[in-house]
Image (spheres, rainbow, N blue to C red):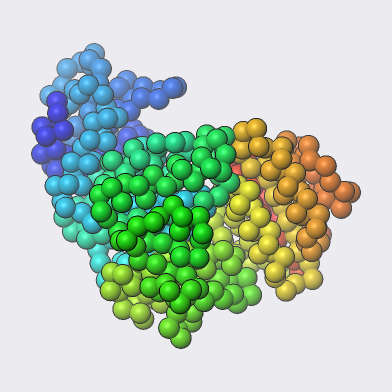
Amino acid sequence: MKKEEIYPLFLECSGVSTDTRKITENSMFFALKGENFNANTFAVEALKKGAKYAVIDEDPETPNERFLKVDDVLSTLQDLATYHREKLGLTIIGLTGSNGKTTSKELINSVLSKKYKTKATFGNLNNHIGVPLTLLSMNRETEIGIVEMGANHQKEIEFLCGIAKPNYGYITNFGKAHLEGFGGIEGVIKGKSELYQYLKKNEKTIFLNIDDPIQQKETSYSKVFTFGESSEADVEVAYTQNGSFAGIKVNGLHVQSKLTGSYNAKNMAAAYTIATFFEVEQKLIREGLENYIPGNNRSQIISKENYQIIMDAYNANPTSMAAAIENLESMDTTNKVAILGDMFEMGPEAEKEHQAIADKLERSNIHRIFLVGENFYRTSTSNDITKFRTFEDFSAGFKPWQLDNAIILIKGSRGMALERTLEFL
């Protein structure tokens, strides 16, 4: 079956499912394949659990009129999402970058939803499966869609743009993330800039941080709406900080967030700028930014009886790790603690980048430093830094009573799962 034949059936359904453990009633089940699974074998189970149709690409053992046979389930999911996006005539904002894209996406959604019916990428569903699922979750009531796009190699953002076809786009920054897949920082810049290339080719609008010289160089385009500390920006912003919380000042209006880290001020500014472009009232923008509460281990402040935790353990790369360390250094407290885990997907740069972070910590004003993971364990450090090869070693050797009146930064790559530290704090 082709997408044009499947689409009317999709419109009969309540939504899309790809996991038989999370089937929703009257949904359309897509039997995706992976290296270690083949959901074609679960198509019958999907129907039994309430799916209205099951899209498959292998001949079923038992025929059923509710099986929809296609050449390839994944490409059908992607094609259907693009077809749906075009049928609805959606306004799509595409978003990518090395750091801060999920927080930026949430902030943009928070401010735009004050005026429009919006739909944004749920959680971190930002890849070749997540982007189609995001688009298919939109409907005729959706006025603006905010689609996060993740990538760890060249041409991936280009491919996702082909699916989502964004009308607008914003790149948070170019940092040292996924160096192994991109082949170094120049590869990161080239790969992330595929969003800009798509927008320029299709004469769409770019939202741009005018203070970022790399972004300025990569853009060179007339249809831009800018923000920054420069008076030349369309939205002139001053960055502020109240204790550990980021803020911005625009046109004399001060906006204070619940986001820790000075680096989050730029994410706020981007959301403010995009909302301004879409003519959201200033007071509503302020509400959207100030009422947003971070979750999912991203820039969260967790208060305990006699100490505070900056929980930023969802992900880490050299750029975001350095920013988090600098933010902790800037805080006015007599007891600063850093618990940092390995940064993944560094490839041949792993040894150098972990040593660079260790050297930065040696020069810092952080009082107690704990490094967890094989890469950090192999770094050359003084005895002032305590290192553990595994999380299990750390949990056994760490002494929580050292933390009285402390501010504690917890940060590491997703695979380190350092949020487990909360279990024994």
